[in-house]
Image (tube, rainbow, N blue to C red):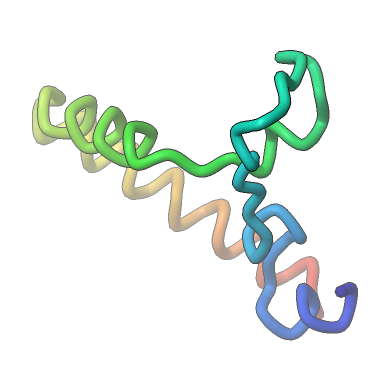
Length: 76
């Protein structure tokens, strides 16, 4: 898993997904819940971004670019 994540520049949570079988009740604090992926998260982010003025979107874009640059420099 480590080699895959190093190659893809990601974390295990980025490449793994947990889908509960539906027959068991899982506590909300169960660590597996971090591996749940829902379409709602993507939709919520999109809605939030769509509601921001252009200058705020530019700030967010710069922040994302900085984070990507930092991640790349840490890998060197």
